Image 1 (spheres, rainbow, N blue to C red):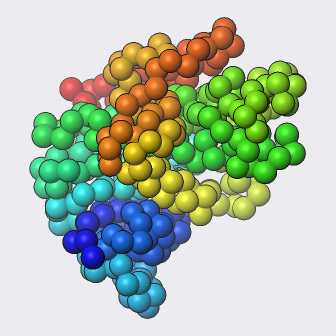
Image 2: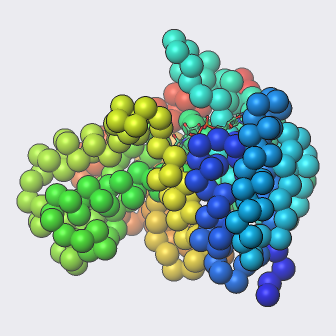
Length: 327
Ligand code: NAX
């Protein structure tokens, strides 16, 4: 049996946390041969810490063979100490009437503090995956604080959007979703994201040829994927949690599986016209556990270029809102 890895999770008593932790402890994220120690971090709020104790009790009650320890804390220094993976799920939600700029700044302060502490106390091989919204910009902010860890260690999750896009293409084509390949998400995890259908294939043929409805691909398809989160809130009365947790399992598992090609928000290297200072969703190929290269050779037509320009502009604007924090 391998020695355990330490997995720090913020927002561990939240909705996504409740769907996520049991899958990490069961081996879904790191494999059935990899023991884990969970280091669960919550906001310093009595109610949240009490709920976290309940979650830890339930983890105990599952008797997971791979779970070698659970730490619960409201102190990020304790929670991130020696962590090999830092899953940043916790964030301040947007309250009624709250301006987007204020949401960005409030979360910015959280992610500045967490980025600093991770850089100081996490393991040398630490990797960070950000889920808390606005995920791309929060990731950029956390990475801005790192002196020891390089920017490629910081990724944000757009995998839920990729999974949503894959299923929508399969439903439209009337095929099993495993027939759909090479659908990747570009840009921000927000309604401006672009699910690039031109590269996608269905049963080995171009998706656009199989679906044969360019208006649907350019219109309703992009809209359904971009606004799926809002549709789930409208139906369920709460935001997507189980599917988000599942996507994070996919995100981390695929970043640890060499050869996998998948959508991840990473620091832009200027590819596809993204500003080099933003974190943008794009296809990456995992080259070694935790390491990746960006796939830069996808051809974009004028429609794709205009969608990417719009989502890039939103990311650049978000960065401008928090510029004073990351100086
Ligand atoms: P919840 O409100 O259920 O849980 C968030 C938890 O974070 C709470 O328990 C809260 O106490 C905790 N928290 C707040 N500040 C913290 C801090 N400084 N340190 C540690 N914990 C802190 O939200 P949930 O539904 O779990 O969603 C979590 C985040 O994921 C939200 O920002 C949400 O918008 C975002 N999402 C991101 C998605 C993505 O694809 N990137 C999709 C799903 C989700 O909407």
